[in-house]
Amino acid sequence: MDTSSPVETLPHVDRGKGEGAPIVLLHGFGGDALTWNNIQAGLEGRRRTIAFDLPGHGRALGWPVIGNAGVSARAASASMKTLGLERVHLVGHSMGGAVAALIALKQPETVASLTLLAPGGFGPEINHKLLRRYAAAKELHEIEVVLEQFFGWEYDLPRMLARHVAETRARPGATETLQEIVEDLIDGKVQKVLPREDLAALGLPIKVIWGTQDRVLPTRQSHRLPGVIATHVFERVGHMPHLEIPREVIRLIREISAFE
Image (cartoon, rainbow, N blue to C red; front, side):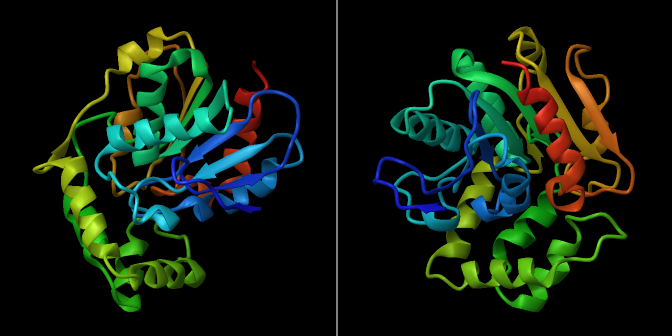
């Protein structure tokens, strides 16, 4: 169900129930909580899942403070506390992956596991030109052309997704907000790098999921990670594994969330 939340809590979609720590889902740059719909549907029979709209995105367009992954990490952490979520399994995509990693680094006692889908911050390379074009796109045709670059070459872009993005961009201030956020995310032509060894040292179960046809963040950023991090690389998949291969992603989330 869509949850109407108090001001101090990020808007979110709360679905399912079950024993064990809930699963919190953090979307990527330019996305929103609805991008996790298939994943939440696949998990709701076993776990409670909460998908947030991060600051400046979705229903949090007018959030008081917007910016980089650190800003979103603080907002998500505060929202989890307000919702009474003492310990959760974090799942993050792209920018949301960096958000999840930062939460784990700052508050490891609140995190049961990390599942990171093509996460930001695992290497300096980033397709800054594509992300800046995506942030500025307003018209449906323009959005379709840009969005196709986020998926594997054989994947057919869902028209519903492009229409949803176009509708969100029609809101006053939407593109300007995304353009402000993308400039805070990208340091000129590169991105800041997370301390991956520090992540590995937390002792948490960590899975990293990547596609070989990722044109936003190169797959090689998944190579040579610390050995305790489980890496899952999928052929012929782009930057959106949760949309391109939802069954496989659900399976991997179920596996890691089985460990409490």
